[in-house]
Image (cartoon, rainbow, N blue to C red; front, side):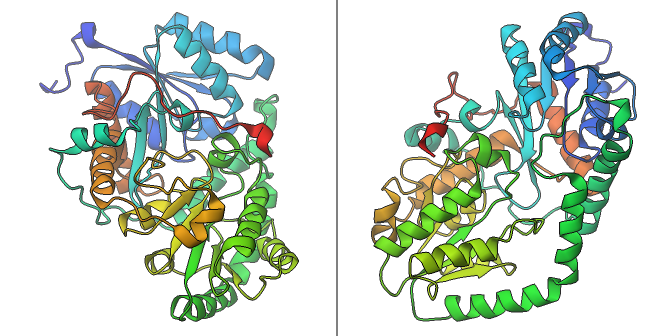
Length: 432
C-alpha cells in the first residue's frame, strides 16, 4: 500500500453513497479511486441503466415504489454509516428525498455536473448547486479568495465525440426501456421518452448538412452585418436548470418573454439571434415557435433562428447575451460582453451580469467588470472544478481520479469557494 493511500487507517475512512450519475462509467471509477484511498463505497441502483454503469461490488437494487423511497434511503444511510452522498441532478425526485435524509443526519452532499467552464471540465460542489450552492455571491469575497490563485489552463485537454455520448446514452436508456420489469416502479425524470428522443435525433442527423448551411448563412448575414445584435442561446428543454432554477416551467415561456421585450424596447435596427442547443433532440419545432412569436410582434425580419454554427463567433461580436441560466453565458462574460440572466445562475453576481430589467438591457446593457470575471473564473476553477469529461475514457479517468482526490482530502469548494449558508434564493414558480 502506497503512502498516499492509507487503507489501513480506518480512523479517516469515509463511506460514500452513490446515487444516480451521468450515463457514463464516471461514478464507478470515482468509487474505484476512493476504494484505493481506503474508503467504502455503496451504490443504490434505481433502474437497469444504473446497474449497467455500476459493475462493481457495493450495489443495492431499489425496486420499490417512490413513496417508500425516503424511508429506504434513510435506513441505508443509517445501516451503512454513510458520511457523504454523491449524485448528479439534485432536483430529481429520488435525490430530493435523499438530500433531505442526508441533511437530517449531517451527511455531506456532493453534487456532480458538467462544468460551468467548458468544454472539458467537471463540476463537484459541496452542498449542491443552484439555490443549494455554497459558492460565494459577494464580489469582494470572490476577489479576496481569488487574489492568490493562478490563472486556469483553459485549453482543451480531453476531447469527446457525439458518437461516444450517443453510445453511453443508449447503454443507459435501452435497458430501462426493454428491461423495465427489473425495476417496475422506476419513473424516468426526463420529459421525453428515450425512444422519442432517438427518433428526433435520427431526423436531425439526416438533415444535418442542410441545417449547417442555413445556420452559416444566417450567422454571416447578422454577425458580419452593420446592425447591433443580441444572442439568446437556448438550453435543453429537459434541463433541470430551467425547471428548478428559474421561474419558467418551459423554455417556451422565456422565448415568448424575450421576443416581446426585444420588440418593444430594442433599437429599431437591432437583431436577435436565437440559437438552438447543439444536443437538442428536435422534438420541439423551435423554429416554428420563434417565427410565430416574432411575427406576432412584427419583428420577423429582425429575429433569427439558428440551428448550428459557432457560438463563440456569435457571442464575441454581439451587443449582449440573454439567457435563462445557460453556462454558455460564460463565453460572453469572459469576452467582456454584457449578460442578462432570467434565472438562477452561479455567475449571476453583482458587477458581472447586468442587474437591470430586461426591457432596459436592450439599449443600456452594462459590460461585466473584467477584474471580477477573472477572479470568478480562477476561484470557480480552483474550488469546484476538475479537468475531465463524462464520455471519453481518458476524460472519465482524469475526472474520476481528481474528484476522488478532492473527496478524500475533503477539499471540495476549497480554498475559499464555500460559505456556510447558501446565499441564492429559489425562484418563485408562481410568476409564470
